[in-house]
Length: 360
Ligand code: ATP
Ligand code: MG
Image 1 (tube, rainbow, N blue to C red):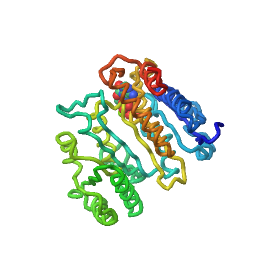
Image 2: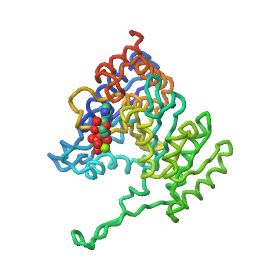
Image 3: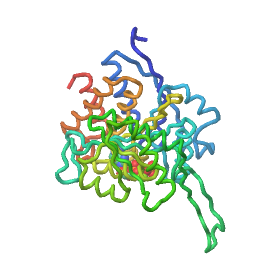
């Protein structure tokens, strides 16, 4: 090890589709960044858990797999999902099978219009759209509560119960206020649907008001989720930090990614803010089998998520340098087809490395 440099152990799980392509690109970029700065080291351990292993063994994560994962400082995740495995099996088999036991209850999704990229919104310039969506990641509509009866009968019933606990709502609300407080505008929009849903959503409103008392410097603003979609499109500059339930934030963050220009640039952090377990960093996009193997996947989302990972590990300077290099490369027009360019994954990767090392 380099004297005086910190060393981090990172688990990489590329998984399915374009996952391996974007993870390879990110590891190349991260290694070049570490070498250039010389202030930290990253040691990667690769786990080849994927839908392929599921089809062969019936399991995404082998016995003892979670205990192995737990030893790392962070997890860099690609994408899971295959055309011949039902989505709910792959999602629960791998991603949620890590998020839940590791208590990664805060899902953080920053979105902005990068320099050099174009929002589909008319008149939306860089700086107008700069948001962080905080998604409750442990319960709510995705708690897995519910069931089916009279299967296949005309009178079949299925329930999908949204579950909200004071414990989980309070911790995500606190995290969201802290996130808002750490940003220049100190503005938090709490999104619910408390006009129609009178239990869980009213609990959200009440807890938001309680937690707000501990953050007098943060401006709190409330929105119903339906009206929120309009506001995101019509007044993007009026928003900053946003907190919402598992389902609502899932939908809003896809909208956010599209408004920022492409799903190919949007990152996600699954954080355990108590730091008892490793946190997991991934691009928002899925396995995208339509473009797999063509070398055209946009690696920017995985670069950005890598920058978020560095920040979480405490390497703030490295994180900023990486994001800055990515933006400069976009500004130079070295972008993939989803952003209107002709560059391939390797071209973007090479350009970012050249920017980092100063050889451009
Ligand atoms: P999942 O079911 O896991 O959501 P998916 O195969 O539906 O995965 P998404 O990631 O949701 O794919 O993406 C939808 C479409 O957006 C893809 O089919 C692909 O064309 C495009 N896309 C997604 N990610 C990227 C990327 N990194 N670069 C370029 N295009 C992308
Ligand atoms: Mg999809």
